[in-house]
Length: 234
Image (cartoon, rainbow, N blue to C red; front, side, top):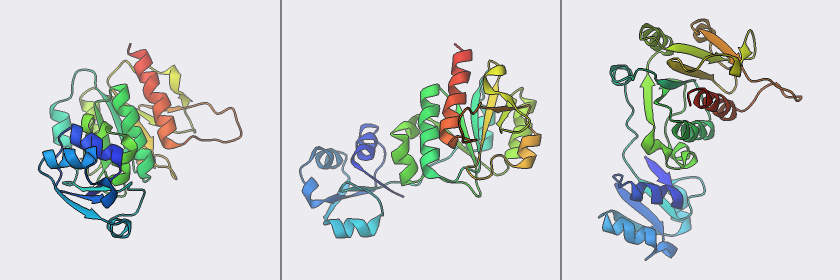
């Protein structure tokens, strides 16, 4: 896949990630990024802006890298290495790559063990996610599963408590105990959690709204609750 931007390039270079090929603006010749790529024996092509724009849409800043597709963990990978008190984020069909990237970034900062996404009807790790996550992808385990509800049942058998997020029939997010093994579910931007996922939750929690709007951006809501988990586990 293609990723772009100077900061993304610097992160990939510093982490010595495999880079198949680089496409740089001619103005980047002999820059630190150019020299570092060459030191890693990456083949570099120098193009004008028009040619770079044809490779990828977005603010590439004169830097486009071709890297292997992202490698996800499987459900079995995760279940086989759960620690005694895991902290898991499950994204129920999040579609916005900016939200996904921001959630990954906060999850890394909050010490989340796994971030789970479904294989279908969900955003995947792409250039926008990588750029928004600001390097956090290298430190967060992303799990791709076929069926969220089947995973929930397996997690419950391992003693994990399931906390869903929804405004209806809910309790305040800071009124429940997250010191237990925890899986926090964040619903999609437009529809929230699916009805069956909601039924399988042990608790439904919500963030009180005191203004005129009745919901928060998915990544903002996820961040608030993640840090409540962190606070309780200190």
